[in-house]
Image (cartoon, rainbow, N blue to C red; front, top):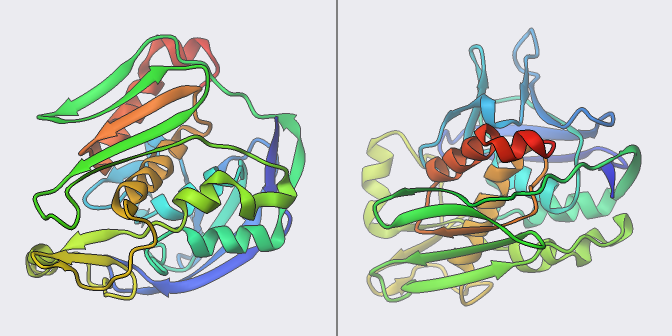
Length: 289
């Protein structure tokens, strides 16, 4: 399969989940082989921050990338949208420190990508093959990459709140033609799933300077009596959103290896640890990563 970029630029504005700052984002076509990168256009030097594992600077309730003194936070939903729609190369210009949360999912990003479409580029997309399992864990939480004949993402979560409970979802990426982005399995199954949180944790997180921009309009919130802002888009929307986060985090590899990515009760930190293990492994170095 060839590499792809956007056929035209897309634009979105909104509030960042943690900073509460309103930012504007322009995602533009990029040359073949450039990959995905952020550009802080509000800083005079306009530093370029590559969307790569080595640029990760923080993983507290979101993934943050940095280069020098320039950072950009909560990149995972936008990056998941680009990778899930098959956009290999993109220049992401942003005028602030955090990507807008929008409705808490990747759906609006995917709709914008579908509206402009993709174009094929002159070089092939190199897809590495995983030959042995790689995993990381903390307690009973884990994330693994397992050799498989096709790429698949499976995620499980387990919460004491009965409205969430134990739930799983498994997603098989299916890339259609560049003209059919909105019909892809990512657009249909994963992109609409919104971020979620627990009502009992809101005050504590805000005291820590987090979720300043969070609201019932951009996040699902669950309490002891159930969801505060139903209805859900899927019965297992939280598990699907965790796949969205995992796709965004593993997109920092550049291209997903052919593997079954399996996670349970994991976090951005464990996702990034797995990505680093894949990069460090002799298998990835032998197969094009």
